[in-house]
Image 1 (cartoon, helix red, strand yellow):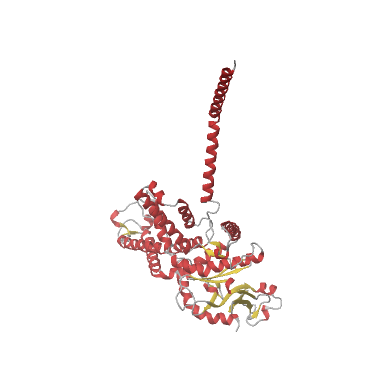
Image 2 (spheres, helix red, strand yellow):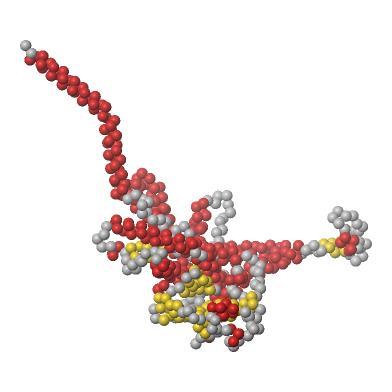
Length: 518
């Protein structure tokens, strides 16, 4: 079975999800779903009457991207299995941590130099709107496939079995890449057809590997075959929400489709009604001596003959109705802002920074379930693929997987660390307020508090925070320096005492000699 046939078969299952995604995109960001017609090309998208949906999608996708791939800190950590160290001391572990930190920085610099974050941000937009996105990690970087250009088949456990993508490429490019294929000689590829042709990529799981190839006009493109172990697969089909038994995910916009539709209808009615109310139309009585042409030609401040009672203005007495619609729009916008994690701080002169911070934390904690899914389906395979590619290219040294284990510290783990930090801070404040700061130091170990705060903030304390041995050594060195300074200060006094003792001994000796002399 050809890739095109398989794509057409799996498209029937995708159709209901694609229709929902198209409806969601029309209410938020219409260009996310390709509006392509084989005869006329791209269709013109319709602009929504409101921008709340687009703002919510952009805000939520940006927060997801910044949480998964933070620019300032690492989203993973290479940790050594201490059970494999044996009798080696902490010095060896410290040296390994330094080496791992260098490897982490190399990987982060590679990510920063590439356009991975741009592609991931676009993928997050598709996830929020359509609930699905496919990322291919190729040699030239990440490539994104929207839901309208790929199909997927999964087993009962949600594991991927088959993926087929569809791309449109210029026919002349295909002829240059594959001289043996002449598109004009293939059935259905006449000169009247479009200049673009469809290229299908068929990826299928075979045992513990995934293999793929590309086809055009039902023929396999030479040198397009590829394979990779499932543990480092370059194909990452992402989902926003998982429904048991379904091959595709559900988006965030779909969950709040009712509010978005209501907001769209109310915004359209309010805009069109306001435009009608803003239109100025004068009426002139048929029996009036003032002619309509005279009134229309009169300039600002002009004087014409007529009676004011014969001239009127058309008014739309819909102010109360507009107020009701405007109030309802405000209520819906508030619900959507909470749904898409748009920070809305209470407008008051007494609003404090602590209130703003707590509001932000509550919004971020709503992403807990989503972070768990994205960590499994995106961060883990993305990191494994990055490590494998960079080790093969020699950018980083070989890492023994039985000793070193990469651990994800972003996403849901970052939320957990934030909760630990808040709990520890509140615990310290409660003790300080209860027993006092001085008494608190009798019960709290400062060294352990610093380590836990650094761990909760994702900061490496190696060579940053002094260890107990270093502090004890510095204290002993300070004591020795103080003793040496005291000895230097007491040296003149000691010399004077010794001099007086010597003089007294000499006097006593002289007196003894005088007494012994005849």
